[in-house]
Image 1 (cartoon, helix red, strand yellow):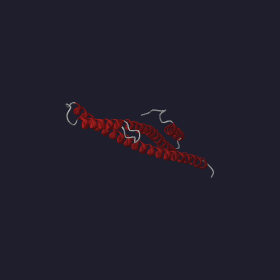
Image 2 (image 1 turned 180 degrees about the horizontal axis):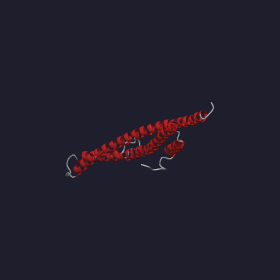
Image 3 (image 1 turned 135 degrees about the horizontal axis):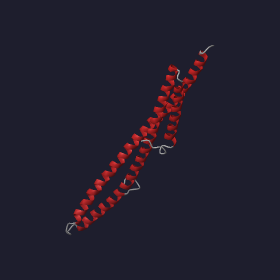
Image 4 (image 1 turned 90 degrees about the vertical axis):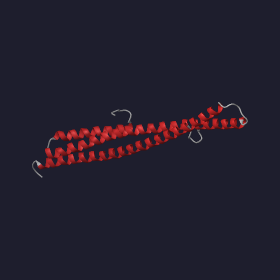
Amino acid sequence: MSGGHGGIEGSNKRVALLISVLALFLAFSETLGKAAQTDAISANVEASNQWAFFQARTIRSTVLKTADEAIALLPPGPNQEAIQAKRAEWAKTMARWDSEPATGEGRKELSEKAKVAQEKRDLSLHRYHHYELASAAFQIGIVLASAEVITGIVALVFAGGLLGIAGAVMLGFGFFAPHALHLF
């Protein structure tokens, strides 16, 4: 291999290696992005379910409270003891619906569960956005490096490599510090 072809072949091998590394990191960012997206959707469904249960408890409690208030307005009658017993039972039920630590199904506990799910969703979405930007940087880097093989413009390889570094940085932010850099 004499002449100029040895240099071109060696250069093409380095470009091919760069493209391979960029493609490897692209696979990582796409996989992590899909996992983050799935986690965000699951956490959003969980938060919605908890808030729906919270609302159902609130509605039932409001209905019971309204019935209790209406009965309290009635004049005393012959069934006063039974009415007072029923009102005491309703008061216990309303208190249990407000907070039920044993089962985690009181309004207070449901609200906390929903907020935790929302925080998980938000974290996953931050990660997802970073992984998407990383994927875009890797894809553009691959395109630029590939274009250098055809055009021979060395600056394209450097631009592709720089985009690869930028993609790796975004991948790192998504994995280690998704809240450190806010882009969306």
